[in-house]
Length: 369
Image (cartoon, rainbow, N blue to C red; front, side):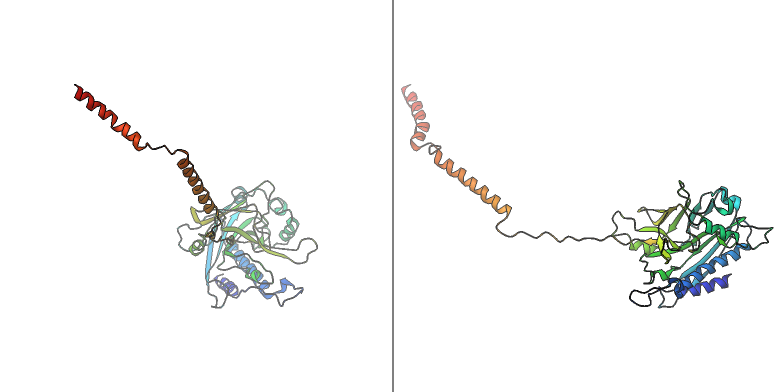
């Protein structure tokens, strides 16, 4: 299994964005593109390795293998670990308690898988129709009916053993989508495959009306990512949890829909725990798309820098007219007061009467006595 995973790592290291063959109005078979097919082979190959590992595992047992992906210097692929983790659960356990996977919170490196909580799914019904999405129910039933288990039919049938498959991708496993052929503008990081499988088939876990939070995940971000997004977002959440959707075209469209979407998922993030991103989803990714979740890095909102106000240095402004009218009023009041009361201060004769006559009276009284 480790050698096969190394092959997958080599294939992943050679992934590139898929460009359009040429400019202009042309019709392109996207599915026939080399990079699109390479991505499909990588996703399917890792799933098959996980199925083979799970075939030899007893119930409630976890096994993990990992290899280093070292791309060339000119490659768009990021170097890192490609880790495959497989856990086997019984049907009764998944029906009653669901799936609960806890990563090593003390680990210094990136988690091999996020914190995963899948609620109890209840009875699957005929060919898993109670679990499936209404839009893909019939297609999933056909897949289950043709599934071949690793054990003889009398020993194992579909849904007897539920395999929890988790893959840590060092780089975007659908890198072709960032090329001009698909034109996906989503900037994603920390991709993980999270899916339930049985007898080599992806189990369809769709949205159920009235049921929310069927799948809860907790991601721990890389320090470089956190540092780069501490500014410029104001009240906007800088991350959102997305999953890769690859489904047939809707209506008369023949082109497949390939995109990163947040359909059915709500993202929660707090400044107090800036390296932790939580998601609550009502479904797992649609079968056939690789079941890849990732953290989408939200672009910073535009910042409009207003220029400083222009200084008003012209004479004709409010302040100039205010002071002119103020001093005009003060001058008018002074002139009116100066002209209106010419006898405000006593004359010399009045001062003589006020100051010397009482003194003369006192002197005469003193002499007379």
